[in-house]
Every structure is written in structure tokens, then in C-alpha cells.
Length: 177
Image 1: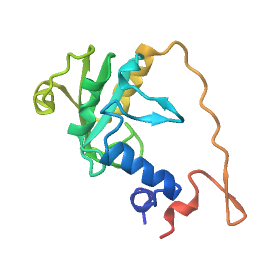
Image 2 (image 1 turned 180 degrees about the vertical axis):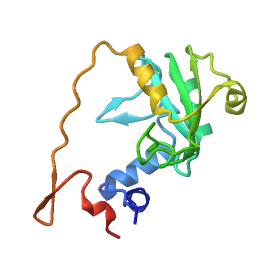
Image 3 (image 1 turned 30 degrees about the vertical axis):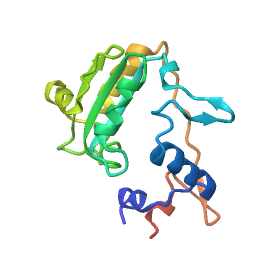
Image 4 (image 1 turned 135 degrees about the vertical axis):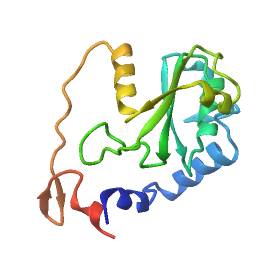
């Protein structure tokens, strides 16, 4: 089994109560989008988000359909870059610009929007968004450079222990069925 296939088959890894509340409150009841979500007794309001957003969605996502993700542009009051990536839930996101995991047919569409200026219709947005061949990660890197102040060195990822042995990250467990 390839690491990507193992990731697709991975379990939720959330405690049952957390998973149940997550699905009920955020998906079934849509409390966050309806301005009714509370966490730890505090009201969470999307309109209170002011830092610029980089929002990424994938064309064939079975968990978060891109037209639903797009709605965030109407719920927040801030500048946002919306990126629509070719591919599905996992492969679309894990699409590096180079190396053995790079996908030759990768592509994405993107556009920047001031608050409330994105088209209401996501399909209209898609027709006019800039289309680019390659990994969306380069778009993200450019956005981070525009909005960041300094570069910091990457953290060293420690080796992991699996069955008492040290193995390099991500670990051999991703190959187990």
C-alpha cells in the first residue's frame, strides 16, 4: 500500500464525543456559518476574523465540496485568496511542486478578493479565476511571502519509534493495512 492510499484509509483518530459534536454542530446544524457556534462558553464569530485568509479547496472533495468551502468568502469580513486545486480531498492537497510525489497534471485556479467582493456564485468565480498548471504550493508560498515578515528555519522532525525501533518520519506504520 502506498503512503497516500494508507492516508486515505486512515481512521478519524478523534475521541467519539468530539467527533460526534464536530459532525453535529459544524455539519448537520451548520452553527459556525449561522453565527451560532460556541466553544468553551465563548461565541465564535466568523465576521470577527480580520487577518487575511488563504483558503484552499479541491475540485473533487468528497468531504468538503469546494462550492461549500467557497462560501467562507461571504461569511468573513477580510481579504482572502481563494484557491481551487485539481484533484480530490487528499491528492489535491498533497501535491508538492517537485519530487517523486509531484503530479504532472496538477493545476489550480485562484483569485484575491477584498471583503464581500467575491462573486456570490462559485461557478462564476471559477470561470474568471486565473488558471495555473502545477502545484498550488507555489501560490501559497508567494502569499506567505507577501503577508509574512520573516523567514524562520524549519523545525527538525525527529525520528519516530515503531515497534521499539527508530524509523525515519513519517514512519513505517503508514504502509500497514
